[in-house]
Image (tube, rainbow, N blue to C red):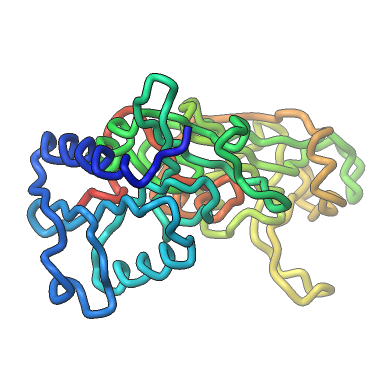
Length: 300
């Protein structure tokens, strides 16, 4: 059930208890002079060492435009922020660390983290499919202040499996059989993570060394490399025949990857640049992990 303005005080008290319990000093902003004349807020301020994090609990009537404007002010001031919003419809972006807060029938506060895919309709508090994670507010706040609340697709520092998908076909040059890698998937075993998938031609070139082993001959896969295509006047990632190294034609249409089969796979630890690159994919969102990590809202 939705929270009301009268619930805000209780919600703030719950957040303060968690934050203070983790060794942070918590108070409210002392006034405009603290972070600029254009920022008017009664947010909680948590400080530890050189790190300052604001926790905003705006009333349900607060417009999202006002939320975004205030977030920009925090960015300019170098202050990190966690938003506990009483309205379910807000943008999903790295720049807005936010969750929707409502109450269970038991009257406990819960935080809901949305997924993407609702471009044609507004997100609803009453539609469970609109939400990828539902946890207690205390759990969310604890995650934000212990390095477990993060934005992206794959978590840096976690193991993952890289799988090459493709087809076994005859080379157009020499007529020998070769495996063509058409797509690469990065699969995470962690439920709060997602998976990343690239059509071969769309692999970021700087990730080739991580996603494609140097020698795939044992799997009958030729070299996968960046090559300048003179006819198209651009560079592209291409497949080569394992026998004659002739460049093979690209897959026509990304939808055809559903017909591909696994060729080979291997395990990796997600690097910072792999996590950064996959954070640009549509599946990216704010997530809560179980074990503590780094590179998140309240780390540093």
